[in-house]
Amino acid sequence: MKFEGRTVLITGSNRGIGKGLVEGLLGRGVARIYATTRDIDSLPDFGDARVVPLALDVTDQAQVDAAAATAGDVDLLMNNAGAIAYSTTLDGSMEEFRHVMEVNHWGTLRMMRAFVPILEGKPGAALVNIASITSLQAGPFHSGYSASKAAVYSITQSVRIELAKRGIAVHAVMPGPIDTDMAKELPFDVADLGATIEAILDQLAEDVLEVLPDDFSREMFALWREDHWKANAVASDAFHGAG
Image (cartoon, rainbow, N blue to C red; front, side, top):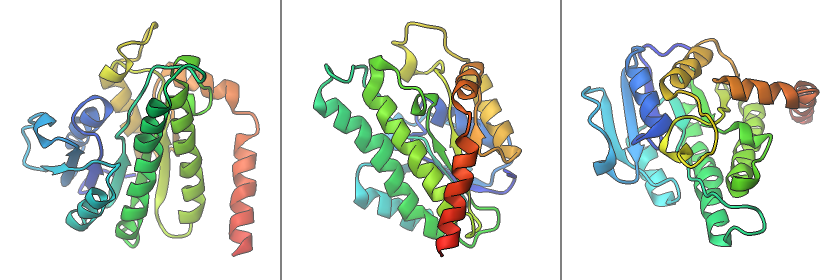
């Protein structure tokens, strides 16, 4: 993937990974970044005219549709907006479980459906979904979050197969715990945000489909992998063979 000259939309750009991606991509020659967040006033001043603030709540279909109507020049969509709840499967509130699923899974799905028609036909168009290594190995203290990110990873694999012959590359970013506000309650060491952002962008530049940007995510993925790639290839062959 080449970043020079691209027009990018990043959800959840006000902090954490989203803010880091905006800053990192500005240093890699992009032409424009639609930096989205629910509250425009929460966006930092990136000090660059290439950044276009855009109000967007990914749980609101009307706002998603409005963003698609505004940002029709996007050729790289980065679905980053997310929510987390620290609770276990049996003790966490149903409202928390619904909320993280609504933001992380349904929000990502809404964005993909709205923007794939925009991406299609643009040379080098790409879609990047921020999942998590907990997509594969859930943590009991944030099981609703893990389930929502597993759903994100699942639909990312599905849409990759769907879009394989439509000229849109689909990437999953699967970090471990990173030094952001979302991870401030975690009881163990977390990866440096700046180094993680650079690793994400470096791997995307190398067309890596499953981006593992830190030591923890790489170690966990190696334990899980086994026949994953074979299963993905079988699913792809079955899908295209059926067509």
